[in-house]
Length: 390
View 1 (cartoon, helix red, strand yellow):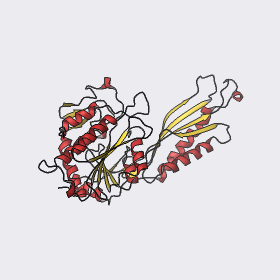
View 2 (cartoon, rainbow, N blue to C red):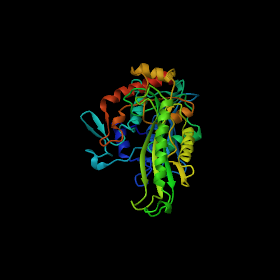
View 3 (cartoon, rainbow, N blue to C red):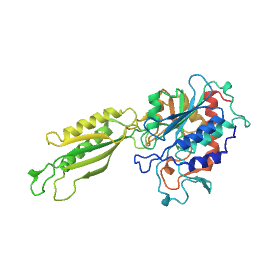
C-alpha cells in the first residue's frame, strides 16, 4: 500500500486538479479528479470509501468515507468545487500551490479544498504517529466530499435524496477563522419576467409596456422588503433582518419603442425560520397583484433551487464542545453553506474551518500557515469527543 502523501503534497495535488463549478457551461468542469485523490488517500487510512456519481451530471460525484461502525458518528464535510477565477488578476498560478510569507496561495486553498488534507493529517497521525484503530471507536468517523456547492448545491441535494450519511453530528469546514458558526441566512434568487406588446412610442395605445408594469412590481417589492424586515429580526446576525436586493433589470431595446419584455432578478436572504417556498408563494402573489388587470403576462421562476437558512440550537452538544475547544461563542454569518442539508439528514450541524471568508472568491486566494496546526488539533479533539478515538 502506497503511503499517504504529506500534507503539503496533498494540498498541492488538490489545487492542481481543476474542479470549477459554474452555472455557465463555458467554465464548468468536473470534480472527479479531486474525488479520486481523496478516495485513494482515505482508502489508504483504512476508510471504507464510496464514490457516488451525481445522476445526470457527467464528471460530478460525491464521496462518503467511513471508519468504524455503528449508529451516529461525526461527519467531517466539505465541497470539492471552486468558483471560476481570472488568472490574469493573480500574482501566482491559481492551479499551483505557492507558499510565500506565511501564506499558501492557490484556488481553493481557503474555500475549501484545504480542509481535506488537514482532516487526513489529523486522522493519520492521531497519537504518536499511529493510525486510529476502528475497533476502538465508539461511533464512526465519516468524511464527506461534495460536488457543485458553488453553483447548484447538487451534491448536497443528492445526499438528502439518498438519505445519507446517517451521522449524529456534522462539521462543515468552510472558512470561519476557526470560530464556530451555528446560524446562517438562506439564499433565494428569482427571475420576474413581464411580457407586454411593443409598438411605436408616439402612440401608447399601440403597445403594452412591460417596463411600466415592472415599475409597479419594483415599488411593491420594496414595500414587501420593509414588511419582512419589520416582521423578522435576529440580533445574532451583523445584518439582523432579511434582505431583498434588486440585482439586475433589463427591458426594451430602443427609446422610440414601447417595451415589450422586461426581466428583473432579485436576491432574498431569509433568516432562520423563514421558509423558501412560503417566500416564493408570496412573491408570486404580490407580482400578480401588482400588475393585475394590465394584460401583461407574468413568469416568476427560480434562478436556482435556493438554499435554506440554518440554525443549530445553542444547547447542541457539538456547539458547546466547539465553544469550549475554540474559546469562541458560536455565531452567525451571512453566506450560505451546505449546512441546512446535513441538518435535514438529522444531524446537529456546525460550520467551522480554517481561513477567512474574505479570502474566498478573490484573486490570490490564500490560507494562513498559522491556521494549520490549530485546525489539526481541533479535529483530533472533536473526533476524540464524539467518536471515542484515542
